[in-house]
Image (tube, rainbow, N blue to C red):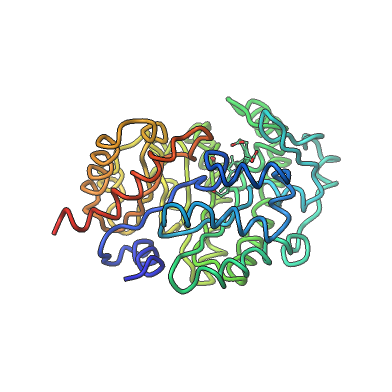
Length: 344
Ligand code: CP3
């Protein structure tokens, strides 16, 4: 079974020789070869230049041989395509001016991904040609709630106070923003599928900061809309939710094929609560990669034992952080790949 077959089988809860492995944020600054690219181009330039995006996507695969590649891009280019000013500063992304009124909303453009995000399609096509048929290629986008949080807060936020306050005072406005984002994201993901991705991941990084009531009102319906529109094309959809423990059943009810969970929940508990119809992805704490090799190996075995390796994609619970040791990443990937031998 090659990496792509293994990855797709796991997404569909079909039998595998061993679970597949990749890491959220597997491309990036912890790699000296990535820093080499960044010395010559800004992050935005890399995202918008297909050859550079392809190179950044391939770097971790050459070094560690993960089963899947994830397109090198970001969740915010879709906002740029909608006419929003997105900047990547040293403190993370900044949206200036943010969207907080009907007049701001009126300035947002609906997108046609094929023309407005043509550079994404070009990178995907080049990657598909390079990776297939051996290795899986994952496309992605931000979930509507997470994108709305950036759009309305203007930057990352610890408590989402602005989007919540707007949702409580002017619910129609926030729902209009969310609906527009859901359309844009669905269009982008369908375009990525047309260009050759094998699966897509929807990142709902910030919905874990919502109460269960707000999750059902503001996050779930729009995640569901996106998941449904992509699943029509027959490709698996992975939904990532941070703070998974609180929203587990609700998130799974989006109809996703795979639920990607952070380390706030034991995989065994997630499996018990959800049954085996939805595959799971995760969920090593990225800080574990700073620990000793034997500990990483033990943690990996523990994770695989929890799912018996079925319907499970090994991954982190959150994105890899910039100063992660290379050895930690290589030990993580190696431990998963060797699982088969140690269990036969
Ligand atoms: O996983 C991958 O390797 C693919 C590429 C990818 C990036 N961002 C590249 C990136 C993916 C899948 C993302 C998703 C993303 N972006 C999320 C959701 C996942 C998560 O982490 O919860 C979010 C919230 C963002 C928004 C974003 N982009 C932030 C908060 C930052 C700054 C923080 C940081 O790590 O610098 C970015 C910039 C960014 N996106 C970088 C990379 C490699 C760093 C840019 C640089 O080189 O300076």
